[in-house]
Image (cartoon, rainbow, N blue to C red; front, side, top):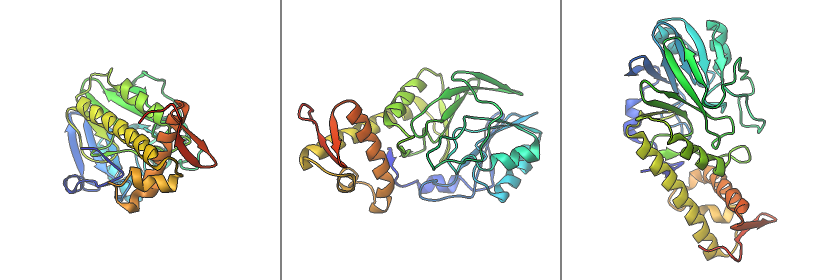
Length: 293
């Protein structure tokens, strides 16, 4: 089951203890940062890849305790810091970790939307589908804009493991944050991932997910079902602003999460407006006369 900005499972919380190192596959380990919350679930997942030399994926928030956990768990020189995107729960620890370790920083620069970690400065920007040989592991960088424009997933081909940052999460769908976040791009990025032969998904928050292609199918179906509910709600209301439309479209989501749901609703509406299905004037949204429900 996929939910919008909703309940992270108690099982996931019990399995994801901050500071504890868990081996997921040969040369793949996970440490959870101590930043659990409504939007971060059990906390941000940091992945340690390799054995003789280490690549750290998503070092997480600027947290000295988490930094010491990463350094203690590494067991070998940290040569690379790799970032999936630059929201402030994923990349702020990069600068200090790179300073302490001398690691090369890999990722895409932060967009200028006011929601990013502006301290993030990569030494290397991965090209889409680029193979990154990082010691005894190899990653394929896959640009997956949508949640943010600089999102990159990383595929470990040998392990058939896809590291997704916030593009795919366990049990919940990520918030799409316009204007930098884009629903059209997000759905296209989901479709793009099907070309890769992964079996498991290692998300930015939550536990390891098996049957990864089925997870993607469910996520895509969930987003399209929500979009259909947007259209049906507009057909019933005739016209509405975002504040009026949010509790109708997200009547299955607790009200204290509606401020986040409103952002994803806006992303759906922007997509539908580009498709000439809905229109907006002075903040009021309605179906176009030719659009069906």
